[in-house]
Every structure is written in structure tokens, then in C-alpha cells.
Length: 443
Figure (cartoon, rainbow, N blue to C red):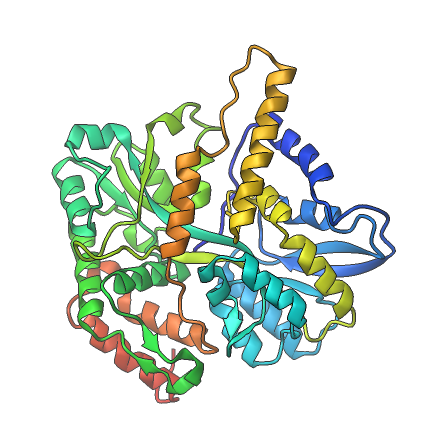
């Protein structure tokens, strides 16, 4: 998934203190386990395993975790193969938003009890709820909501003389980078991260990839539009002026490396990036600035990508009652806050952000008490957390459709490599998607 965090470094004392806080802060968890629930998780730095342990305490079960592959597509394949075979060993699963419609329409997700679904809807951000909904029903519980922001090197912005307090378009940033020897970091490998960027560019120009996604194969494909052509124009502009040499294979990690290098200027990447560099280059955060995701069209609101994870209960599970109880604990505000501090993947609710601030303040207070001469700093500055929340509110998820895997693969087949994108790409893409959805072609 494009929103997946690579392992990132943070202060050992901060992490230890946060874990200690969570031990007392996760109010719905505590005790001795007797049976087993299996939760299939996406790879992370251990935050989900820690939550599994906390949410097992005082229950009649122990939650154990099984780690899925790093690649989001391979995660989908492994889960679908098991569920299609009737595997009852899966109780809970961390599910990527683009695959929610596919799993729900196939009957792989157990129906969430009405009272729990209502509580989750009330608590979660609108975008998180939309990404977790299929056929007007909440089918997974929003766990974390990731979004991208525009990261920039303060030193580069000062050298280029650009005022980063104002909104900027992709075209403006590309020109500024090009004129000042900078390279812009994006995700443009032939993988889901590139589709995420294309979707954000089209949404920012007032368009969308398709209409009526719940119509399945009969959804109206709308990528061949003025918005689609503007997206293609931006990609072409970047590819020819301010791209790194590895553009066609760039991902979250390689684009961050470009950003940290001598030609680093601007970067679009996920929330966890902020603390990614401190381990190797202490003090680097002082040169990191952040702003709202770039506009596709001047004067139009930007539409950052939406990513995240929803927690689903398998319809094949033989322990659904326990699984829904565990789901409630795993997605509580306290759990979201703990996971945000430990992984950099932000909460799916306003209450989660509130708890995150409280936990971090408690960690700083403890650090100050233990070392009076220390000057603790927030894990995330408050203005950055506010930007994350603002960006999540503005973010546009990829369409929730049971055919997303085919649609995404079709887009990648026609929009990659970025250097080959031109005005004809949106039409080629739309025609190819239509052929694939109606069995007139092969991926």
C-alpha cells in the first residue's frame, strides 16, 4: 500500500515511556488470556503486536498476530486465497481501503453489529468512514488514517526565495525546483503508490477515476477528462524537469532518500516521514518544513491522498463475538493514539489525536522528571498534527469498488513509465480499463 510506513527510528526513551503509558492508558484491556484470536496485520515496527497484547489482558482470549507481506497487492492475494478456501483461522485482518469493496462484496467480512457500527461512524473522520463503507454499510472499523502532505527543505525554500506559507501548485513547485537545482520526490514506481498520486492529481483538478463504483464492472470510467489530461500534464512536467533519475522505480523510501540528499527540495509523502531521518542525521528535522499538499489547478483546493487501515472481522471466523470485542479495543481512541506515536500512522478519529497529544505530553513530563536538565520535544509539533488533521479532512480515497485491483493494474499499465505519459494517456487508459472490466483484454 502507498500509505505503508517503512520502519522508522525514534528515541528509545520516548518509545519506552509511551509503551509504559499505554499499559495504564488502554482502559478496555487487562488480564489473563485463555483462547486465541488471530489477527493478520500489515508489517510495522511492532505497534500492532503491542496492541494485540494490551487488548488481550483481562479477556477470555489472547490476540496473536500474523504478519502479511510488505507489498499491499500480495497482502490482498494471501488473504483472499485463505478466505476463498474457507480458512477459519483468520479472525481479524488489517485491510487496505482499496480492497474493502472487493472483500465486502465477496462476503468475506462479517457484519458489524449495529451499535458498534454506529459508535465507529460517530467517532471517525468522514474520509475514514467513507473508505470503510460498502453498499451504505460500515464493513470495517477505521483504525488509522494516513494522508500525504508537502514536505520541503527549509534551506532550499530560502535559497529559492519561495514563500511556503502560501498554497502552491505542482507546476509552480516543479519550476522552482528545476531553476534551483532541486529534485522533487514522488512515488512513481509501477505499484499502488503511483495510482495514489494519479488519483490525487485528478481529484485536485475536479475529476475522478470513475463514477458509481458500486456498479462494479459497469461503473462509468471517467479518467479521460480535462482533469485526467491535467494530471498527465503535471506528471509529464515533473518527469522532464525536476525528477530524480530513479523516478520510474521511486517509492516511499527512495523518494525520502532523494529528499534527504544534496538535491532535496520538495517531497510528497505520508505522515510517518517526519521522524524518519533523526536516527541517521540528528537535527535533520530542523530543516524539514511542511505544508498542504500541492494544488493540481491554481485556486482549487488540493485533494491529498487518503490511506490507512480498517480492521475487518472474517466471516469465516468461529469466534466473531470475541473478534468484535477485540476490534473495539484495537480501534479505540487510546489504541489509535498509541499506534500513531509508535508507527507515525495517524489516528482515524479526532479523539485519537486528543489522546495522542495527552500521551506525548505525559511522556515529555516523565522525561523531564527523570532528567531535569533535559529539554523534551514533542514527537510531532502541534502545528504538524493540525496539518495532518486538515489534510485528512481534505483527502480523497481511491474508489471503493470490488474491481479496484483490476482498475489499478490497468492504470499502471497505461501510465507507466511517467516519462511516457502524454495527452493521449487518459483516453488509452480509459479504453483499456473498460476492456479489462468487460473481459475484452488481459492485464
